[in-house]
Length: 68
Image 1: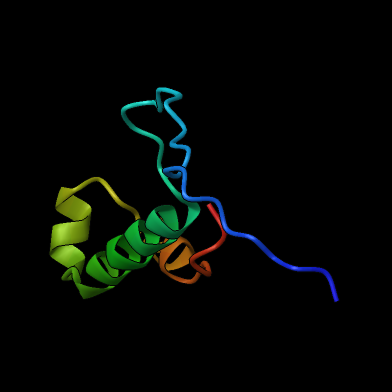
Image 2: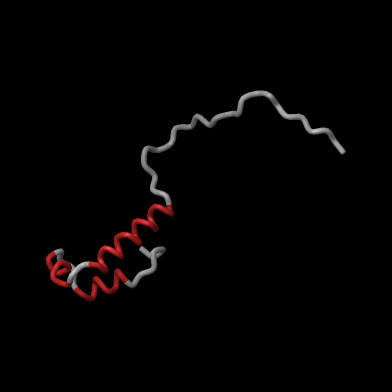
């Protein structure tokens, strides 16, 4: 069996600059879940005040979180 040696040098850190904001897929899904739950909690009068038709509201609430 070959011998395994470990290097004592420090770990290489990737110094590539990352963008300031890049939404993750998980973050997008969680935001959709929270938004759709908030829409479901609206009173019909509040939805109308926000300019949402009842059929639009039902369609948005009924979507699964992975669908935009």
